[in-house]
Image (cartoon, rainbow, N blue to C red):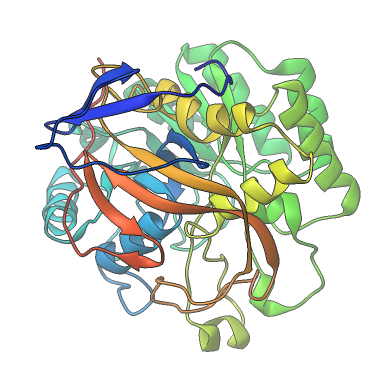
Length: 383
């Protein structure tokens, strides 16, 4: 808690953290010896594209949540730009049904905004946010009309925006005008961080991604993303934003495409849900951030920002979503569970890896193997 490491026993019962402390075990209890390892709350990746339905040759809820489990991610919030896009309550219910059948980890959804679906936004319940695309991205869901954008803000409980450059200012001004909470996805540039440092209000939060923190743009179509990769100065500004507390979350923006699709060009995004935690653990070992801050950015803050019930911290009564990490394990990024089968970090040597992932008290990943158990449930939001 609060970024402190403590030597404790954890008792899990009926999917919950039943007791934490110095505990006696009985012969009837099944124990996991985590000596020499560190237990952290399961990661909540609030920005994934599982491509289900309609684009399942790239990924689906089964393959994508297997990848999440292998990466220490116990909850994913899926984006709406699927085929069809999640723009109606009926389409949301279809996606819910697919996820219930396939997911290995917990799941939730962002609802999509379009030029015609204000009534559907008002009807949608049990969603993390309304996702607005204010710049071009996969799915061609961009919205530019100022009056319509304001209407979407007013119809939503919370907005998550893909906004770049000047559109960040537009989104922040709309959040101020309407009083609605706004989460800015994948901030990527030094100028954007500087502006947010002077203008970010209490109802505004923001996210950065591992690829914008770690990768260089070099014109290779395989690395094409939106927003694009930028300069060393931009990366340094993002790391500074993490250190200062300006950045609220790290999300993978897991957006898989097949290698041949990337090579042909015209598609944007990188697979990342499986490598986010190893990359950030390596950064902890490299002194770029502390383990406590990593937990805040990837577990505590996403649960708080999206009002997810009983997740994000290790506390009695909370869900038993846990990751056992080995901070000393050193290996290269290799075999992956994501259906697209590749990573921009392939063969990168990383120190610090998840060893065991537990979802609702059920071991779903252990020492390189995903257990095909549909342990995940749809998240519940605090009203």
